[in-house]
Image 1 (cartoon, rainbow, N blue to C red):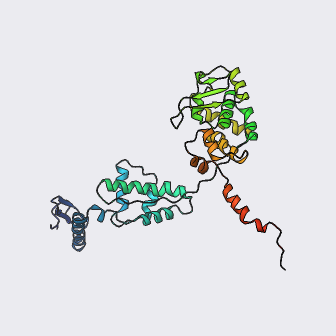
Image 2 (cartoon, helix red, strand yellow):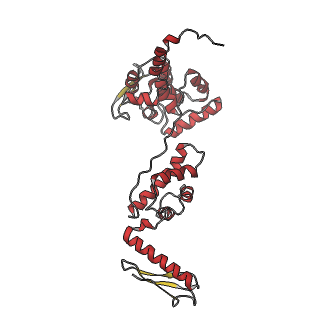
Image 3 (cartoon, rainbow, N blue to C red):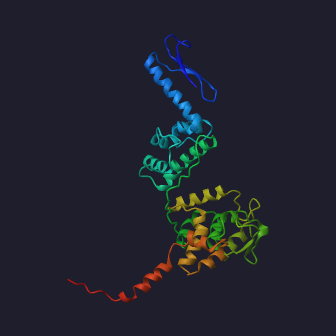
Length: 329
């Protein structure tokens, strides 16, 4: 392969490059200069790039920024690409490493939470690399996310429910009481029809849970009393066709009551597990059985905040130090 410079194309005096690449493709474009020396530098640079691409693949010369632009132009999500691309300016796909990407994301989003760095830095960079790999521009690389520390959700008690009760209609409050006292999922509650509920016995049949199994639940007297006075609405026990309708009612009630809005999962399933463990001393196994969790481990990792095993260990090892220590002056 040999590329040559010429002035026979386009405007007089402007140098062009003309020839073929190592794989036989025609190469012809303007060098946008009238300086012969500069034109020769550009010709040599282009020729080297074409040989490198031919020998080692496009990734040897293509930068992360160029790959990100191609990804965006091909319909990829471009919202968070600018910051990470700026930090990886000039880095070619052939030389980029997971460590570089993590460092770039951390620098681009300095001071932000790990979850934000992952969402706005690591995930977009991964998408670009995966796209580049699918185009044959680079080898796949794995970029680990930063470890995220999720804040523990708090459980609610009767005082919270009492505060929002005046601002909820009876159906909505009955639904809140149901999920709070049974640990059933909000989707299961809202899907209940009159055929699923026996108010005389206070029993509910849930044909299909998230785990794919059928389940039963017990209604407490206040819920039975409310439902006895209310006919079904929209063919449903609690009357809400969509979750958004129930959620909006709950948001309004919290705002009027002057309390923090907590989602239905926190009012129901989360509080059910946490209250039984912390206030009643139930084991994880008993809670999992009562609330329909698939595994005991899920209950322990997600809902139980205390570590009683650690507390017992501390008490045991501290037995000999139970008496007050003398202060040596």
